[in-house]
Length: 270
Figure 1 (cartoon, rainbow, N blue to C red):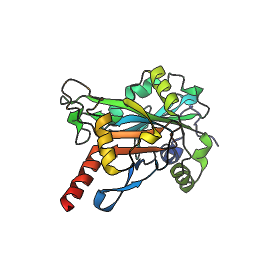
Figure 2 (tube, rainbow, N blue to C red):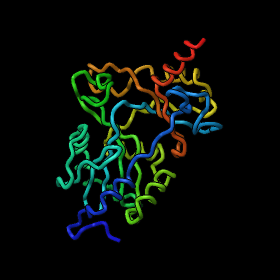
Figure 3 (cartoon, rainbow, N blue to C red):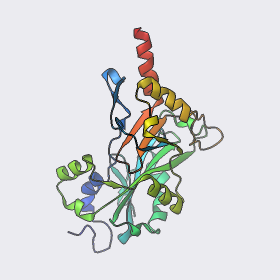
Figure 4 (cartoon, rainbow, N blue to C red):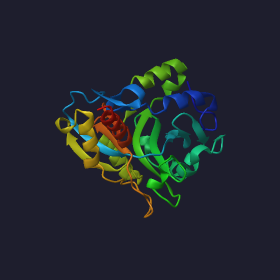
């Protein structure tokens, strides 16, 4: 099964399959969500974990992705849910400013050495933020500057695009996508000169808080202000943390807002 046309460009008849295969999976909250969006005391993915945990800043923006097919020098730019642009304007959707922000990087990537990956479809996941993106854009720039930060990369075999859509969805939701580990991701970002999400600290699994109140204090300790400001006008109020094990088998997010809301409700009930 070929996904390339005679021109060497991607067969657009496989666009839906490519979109599904390269979507970013949902990330669990560190504590499970309970009633009315409040957090419970139940840990989701880090319960019983005692390994090394990497902390990065969670940026309040919108998810973007660049899908590169190195052998064909072809690329796609997408949001979390859909592919918005294909090289040569074969798909064009300016939604949310993602394409404008990521197109120069995508053009540079097709000239890079991404062909070194063992699987030919390489997807880079980036947070696009600032400008008018999200309700907290001014925390990164009050002048309207827009930036992006790399937070994950995976690679996929071409054969996946020949599967039924339901099979692709199940494969993706069950963890079939193969992501780079934390060290390899940072090495790639450095090698390609791509800014990555701010790395804040490395902690042992035994130092991770178990309860909601403990995680609220943990957030403040490790992220007093955003490290992703785009200029001197940034408000720098942070959104939260993303916690990852080295091999990315465990990954969760913790937002200041969720913990503040939960603790406020608990105080009001006393």
